[in-house]
Length: 144
Length: 473
Image 1: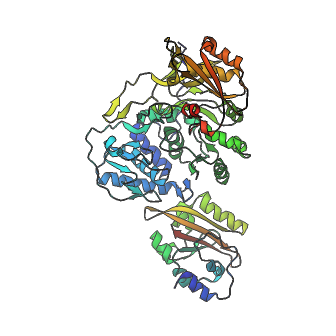
Image 2: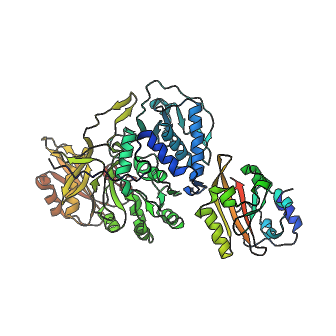
Image 3: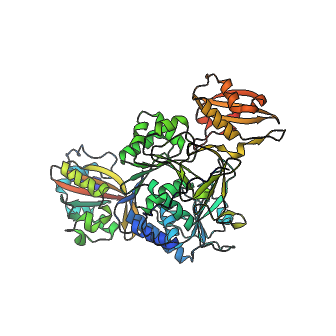
């Protein structure tokens, strides 16, 4: 079952968030369910999904992202995404955009990026998103 | 003979590890610039690459070279458009002390054999993925000729103003230019808009390479510098503060409503590769940009102006080399910038290190300034044996009539001359008396004066007057 189908079933009747970025690889249904996504939900995604608090501490690290980065969820969760798990994102473009978005209460941006996974740089698409209703922050990552 | 121009003192070298030389210095600087640093150094429409990611990609290339037994001085061909793969390959080759022949994409056929190279990154050979990592595992050639451990880059002269040649640039040539031009290169907090081709010496050695070595963020503009509106958008989006360009790109920017403001906002950059027109000089005067003059054979930096100091044809003051003007008004260059040799199908031809390089450019010196007049090879001889130095006459024509954008003096038969005057408007009336004054004794040889309207059809890609097109127009 695809991510979109699974979520569509679960949140039947709910209108996708109008804030969803039109060019994102993240299905629109995901944005409407951000506040209630479980580990099983995010592990079913075929793209990376990382839930972080306002400081960047990882609360959920899904299976796809774990396989991309070679970092086990148990190892990643509890650490800071930007400074401890993905230090290549600790710059103005990535962490800076996150901090600015959290401070402004508005974070919904996508951009192309290159991560160094297992010492092998890989082009990815990033979508940073904050769901104001649930006050949760998400980093979505898709291999290009 | 004109006196030698002032020799610029060696500027303090601000690149890291300046106490080292040659390959050791490339390694030290690349290590300091890239390893473990998390800021973006390359921004393309399809990817943003951090210093650490570029470093990791370059280490994969180093591993590939070593696993194939490619050693210092071995030649490799780099034939690829601007991307992370280009820079990762280049960084790895510098690290290993390889000789890199940088071939324009599309010209790679036969390059392996011509350069007697071990491998090539380019079409039909090794490839790189979007992150700059090696793809494929081609079988290497065995080189027939010797390796040249001191030759670092083989770069083709542009060929727009003469016969193209492959200049062999050593570590010493390149570090001389980088150190002597250091104050004119992107500074600590600059984001660099890259609009020049990377296979040309100007775009490679004086723009993207120093930005890489100083760990600056390079934003590659998506139209490759062809669309001025796209350049303005990219500069605004990425808060670009540095941009080097050829005069034609600056002219195009100046024609758009937001272009002059963008040019004024830049903290620096070099405008070079072709002479700056009167109109462009007026636009750029007082900006933070500098005029630059050079040739691939001089690695390629010869002279740079002060920020905002623009006069038509002015080339600036020499840096890292000395210059003089010979009796034919040709500009000669000598010093560490001047290439150690040339590459031909017969291999490397080493040239005398202390030689005076004849640039083939005719100049005049006025009020302490050296002014570019034109290419010496556009001069010609009349049937009576008299040499007509058309660049100097054309310079006099441009100065005699403030409306003139450009001028050309060409032979007609064996003993007559024709004059072409380029105005902004085709209906301008030429000032025949001014033309005759500029021609002097040659005015009795004047066959015709023809007016052409300025436009892209008369210009080379760099913005110089295209004499072939001018005659055909």
